[in-house]
Image 1 (cartoon, rainbow, N blue to C red):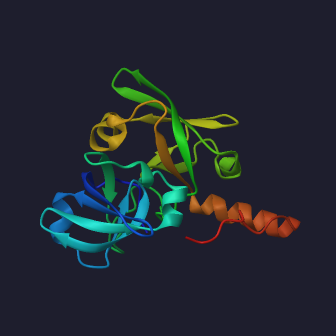
Image 2: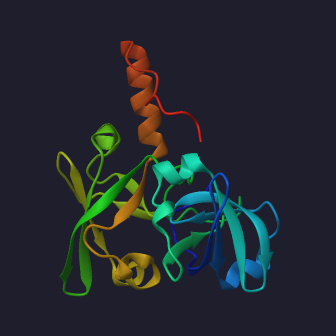
Image 3: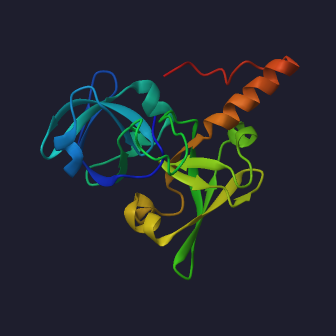
Length: 207
């Protein structure tokens, strides 16, 4: 479980194609504090540490995860958002983020307003039932608040600290982003569907 408050920016230091999936090498200063088997959210995707040293860590990405996230687009030198899991004693400053991406969207607009930034994200139609004005959403693992909502896109306003300390400042219009909707909203939607005798899920196999 994560909070969507990005701990550090890492850099992709290697991409190795495997017979099935891919291995990513992420350079980060927090690697020395990791252990084998630890979870780390990389651009909002929960990955498992399979190797680490003082300079970085390795994580393997399954074919299913590559299909439903933007991790397949990562190349050497790419900047990624990193967050280690929430501790029971930590304050919950963002919202509950599982690291299970619901869909891949794209940046439809980036506009500066004084020291702040408006970012518009186009999302898949299947996610529309989980998004509400003033609700929480994670974009590449960043906990954000929906400030504007249309049929196929939502807008968020980015404060200067978030702009500087996440990979948003390196993003461009058209870039793919991972979207994870609020878990509470998903449970509510599922309960309503079950009550009405509607669909029991999105038809996608667990990953």
